[in-house]
Length: 281
Image (tube, rainbow, N blue to C red; front, side, top):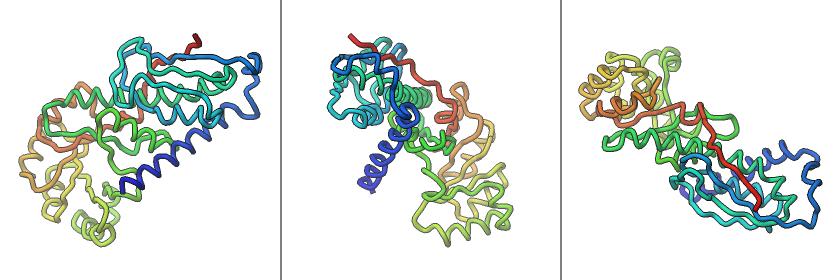
């Protein structure tokens, strides 16, 4: 399984970069032609703000697809905390090719580092509790695997990748299938080898789900008092996930209720890219 995930990630990186470079370069980088073709340059990438690094493979792939003889020497690794003005990497190669790859490579690095940095802030906020921070499917279309990789770099945990590798039963599924017990029975028939989770909106639904045998339950928009009540009512019979409107100001109190998981859509939806710069020297 791990080997397959690595192959899938490698393929995703190549495809992500190929599309991004085609989008940027189009029929050719006309601006880079201002620089003599024979010119060789050295460059440094630095971060202007504290951050958590993520996206090295996407950055490298940009230059590999443009010119695989460009040298990149990293001074940090994915998952590392970076301080303001820290040197991230140095590059050497044809000046034209470095300029052509500059924007796309930085776009990947600053976007994924932004996700990793935000994730780390949530992980740090709940340190010492048993809860873990999870991402969601609220991702930029076409970049899901990249963004979920960045969550991992920030110390978070990945929820299901998509609709194919996990069942999450929501209110419309429950209504269409005839109720909580009926929908869980149907899920058990079709999903024997993937996780099944059911979303509930109140304590009564929680009790129904537990009675029907649910082992993973999402508590949708429960306030802190109701989360504590849910933890007490469940008494360890199922894993509980808090979700809905969670931010850095509220996440600690939510974790302290005793829930097992906290999913945060803003990790990959409300992305603040990290301010990085590449300068020739």
